[in-house]
Amino acid sequence: MAITGNERVTIPYLFQLKERGQKITVLTAYDFPTARILDESGLDIILVGDSLGMAVLGYETTLPVTMEAMIYHTQAVTRARRRALVVGDMPFLSFHLSLSDSLFNAGRFIKEAGADAVKLEGASPRRLELVEALVETEIPVMGHIGLTPQSIRKMGGFKVQGTVEEKAEEIYNGALALEKAGAFAVVLESVPEELAAEITRSLKIPTIGIGAGPDCDGQVLVVNDMLGLSTGYMPKFVKKYANLSEIIARAVNEYIADVRQGQFPDEGHSYHLKKEIAGPLMEKLRRKSGPTDD
Image 1 (cartoon, helix red, strand yellow):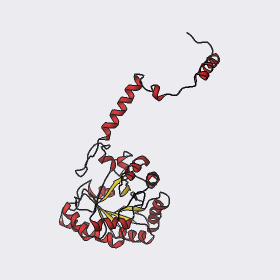
Image 2: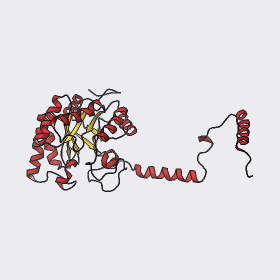
Image 3: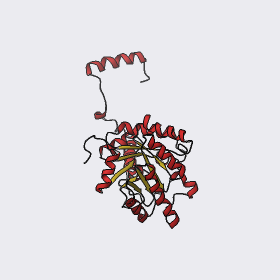
Image 4: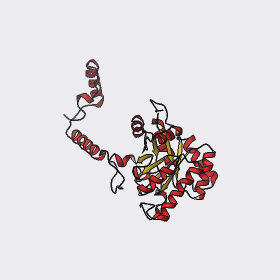
């Protein structure tokens, strides 16, 4: 059964897509206008990622992103959403705390920000315990394994994961454990295509790939990357569908030229008083301002 109109995307619907072999579409968004466009385009999931730290806030990593920033941006996205499932990304140190504090932070995404689910990185025993507790609290969880950006200090940078047998098995087992703990989906980031395909085959829950090959149940990209708004190094897995940086720069340059040459605003972009009001009023104002040096 297809979702139509403003009918909301739900987690059961995502399972239906996996069963039918229909790919799930996911992009990040961090603001109202972008989220509105994504939602109206028919996207399945909008992820308010902690990638906003690098994509929007100018940080070199995602680590400085706070809960307050995530709540603020998630609220903007959910105000725009009519159809898509919105997932809020739990930032660094928001779910590495006591179980009660981590549950409280996750609950803020649902109660304050209006998200439908949260995403968290890792599949350690403590992380799995948290996933179980969140699901028990009726908070849906999307897992995230492979390259987990919040672990880059440990990983030594943004590097492909699972390229050796031991690490590949660890990622595979982590995916199975997340499913068992109750996660409704799992993001596979920067892992070999073959490993992602086997994980996807083994799981009943959908896999969402980012740099994980074409066999995942869905794909996600950072919206600023795919629209050509990001600068600097781009991972191999990023496909640029537009170059908005060039388009915006061209528009700004045209604006600057128009203003400096007196071509903007023109008649079509200006307001006027009625003639019967303009003459007497301008005369009155001139008298008030006193004589000029003409």
